[in-house]
Structures are given as C-alpha cells and as structure tokens.
Image 1 (cartoon, rainbow, N blue to C red):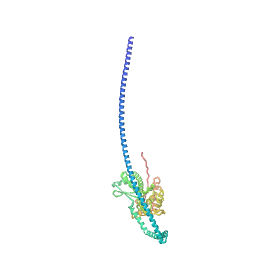
Image 2 (tube, rainbow, N blue to C red):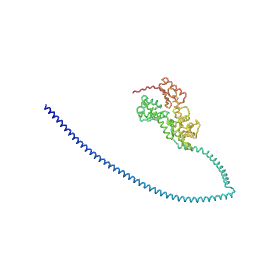
Image 3 (cartoon, rainbow, N blue to C red):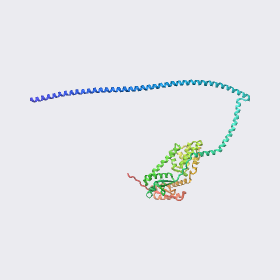
Image 4 (cartoon, helix red, strand yellow):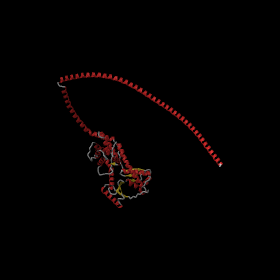
Length: 510
C-alpha cells in the first residue's frame, strides 16, 4: 500500500514538473515570436517611410518639370502677345498714315468737283444762249424742230427697214436648203461610224480535229442533243480546226458557241451535260444582255431608264435590221439626233434618248402584229417615258402625227443611219423574217414546246411534250405543219419537218 502511494506521488510530481516545464517553454517561445514581430514591424515601417520619401521626391521632381514647362509656355505666350501688340501698333500707324493720304486725295477731288460744277454751269448758260440764237434764226422753237426731225427720220427708217426685211427673207429662201444640207452633213461627219453587217454563220475554232469526234459523240447523240438544246445547226465537215454554227438567230448562235466552248474546255461531252451547260449559258447570255443595255445607257449619258427598257436595249446587240446591227444603228441614230438638235438649238438630251429608243419595238419578247414604231411607243408608255419621247418613237415612220420639233429629227437621223451605202441589205432581213414566220407557224399548234428552223430554213425541228401528244398525233402533226407551210408560205426548194417526241424518266439516288 505504501509502495503504491509512493508510486502515485512520484508520478504526480513528474506530471507537475512536466506542466511547469511546458509553461516556461511556451512563455519563452511567445517572447521570442513577439520580439521577431516587433522587429519585422520596425523594418516594414522604415521601408514604408523610405518609399514615401522616394515618392515625395519623384512628385517634387515631376512638379518641378511641369512648373518649368508651364513657365516656358507662359513665356512663349507672352512673347507672342508682345509680337502681336507690336504688329497691331505698326498696323495702326500704317492705317493712320493711309487715312491721312486718303483725306488729302478727298480734299483734292472735292476741289476738282467744285471746278467741274462751275464749268458745267457755264456750259449750260452757253447752250441756252445758242438755243435762243437758233430759235431766233429759224423761227421755230426747240420742241417743234425736234418733232419735225423725229418724223422725217421715222419715215426714212420704216422704208429702209421694210426693204431690209424683204432682202433678208429672199436671202433666207435661197440659202435655207443649203444651210439645212450643211447641218445634216456636219452631223454625219461628226458621227461617222463603221457599218456592221450581221451574218447567219459563226465559226467555232478548235485546237485539233480530234475534238470533232467527241462533239459528234457515239452515233451522233452529242451533236443531236446540242442541236436540240440550242436550235442551231452544228456543221462538222472537212474544214480544218473549225466547227460551223448555222442559225438565223444571233442569240441562239451565241448560246451555242459559248456552250460548245465550255464543253470542249471541260472535256465532259454527253447529252445530260450538254443540256446543263446550255441552260447555264443561256442564263449568262441573258445577264450579258442586261449588262450591255446598262453599259450602252451609261456610254450615251442617258439616265432613268426602266430596267426592262435597258434589257431590250441590250437585246438589240443580237438583232439586225436589214442586215444592220440594231444596237449600232440605235447608237448612231441617237448621236446623230443629239448633234442635229444642238445645231438647231433644241434639247439634245431628249433627242439622244428618243434616238436610242426609236427601234425598241423590234426586240420585244412577244411579237404582236403591229408596226414596230407603234409597238415601241406603247413600250415606252408602259415603262413611264415622257409623252414627247413616246411621240418621237411612234412617229418616226409617220404612223402617228408628230407633236414636237424633235420628232422629225429622229425620223431624219434614222433615215441617215440606214441610208448610208452598204448599211443595210434587204435580202438578209427578208430571210430572217421567213425563218421567224416558219418557227411561229409551227409553234401555233397545241402541244408544241419548242421550234427551231435550221439548215437555212430547209429543215424545221418541232419538239412536242410527251405528256401532251402521243405517237400517232406526232405523225399527224408533222403532216399538218407541212401542209400549212405549203399553203401559206413562199420558200425555195423544200422544207423538212421533223417532230420530236421524247419521254424522259428522271430519278435521284440519295
């Protein structure tokens, strides 16, 4: 028992001593950390004070620089102000000197005016004395003498004026015709242009004759597809490195030429590709027509045209009138109208506008049975052209009455442009009209989709819708068209009518 008490007592003493040691050790560690914190605080305080002193020094330096800059600026301003003051003082002195000189000149002029007034009064007295003296000698007052002189001069002037007027009228009658010819000749000389003759054949050049076989295709399927899509006869003969495109419609020939060019360049020539390219090229040609119309209007300085009129002007590029290119003829007529109107002192802008539009009735999308001048006038009225412009277009072939002085100018300039030697050929115009009539005759039958006159009118190809006409009706249609052509048209030789009915089935694999 005693031993247990001794052990417990020993353990308690050990614990007590351990607690005392820990308390002493912790207190000493706290004092050490507190001392370190105080030292760090002192260092940071000194560092902060040092930074503040450096910033204060920098601020003082910057402030000194700014102060020096302000002082320099103020000094320059003061110097400029002094210079201005000196300049103003000099100007004031100069102004005072000039003012004194002006005063001297003014005084001199006043003195001269006084002398002039005195001399004027003396002259008035002398004039009155002379008048009194003349009245005494003639026995007439000044007013009576004046009236008699006026009457005598009036009679003499009327007689001379009447004689002069008669001479002017006679001379004008003698020279009017000559002067009119001079104006016309001057207009033609100033607007000289080359004659453009259209033809019905386009030559497509190729690099080698190997391409001809690819254009023809197996059993001629490529060339048949191209002819069917464009309506142009493709002639592949022995002509070296050339394929001939024959057709009366210049737009179709251009479409065929561009399509053939793209197919040859691409290398893929087969019926499906041909139809795709022809459709794309036809759209490009339509865009080119619009661009040509815009460019023509800009070149001629004509603004405010309706977009449809601009398209019809571009379409003129691919039309001819008696063998003369219609767009060149319209441009030449417009320039002639402007020059002649200027020579006569009339509105040149209106004359040029009417001259450009005068044959617009020759290129409509549909071709009603009426004179092209009246059709052109109706088109101009439809697209909001001014009434005087519409009248000039409609009256240039005397179908309606002319209502302005510019209307006969358009008529005359149209005749001048078309009457130059070699400008037109009647044979080409009649030939193209016959081919147009041939196509329209076939297109009048129901079920007909497209018609193409090829081989100079010796063959007419008629494409009909497979869902509208069956095989039996196709054969009957060919006979009916042949009979109608025989009865109603005049043509050399014979015309072959080929009616094509094609059934297509198209599907897509996705």
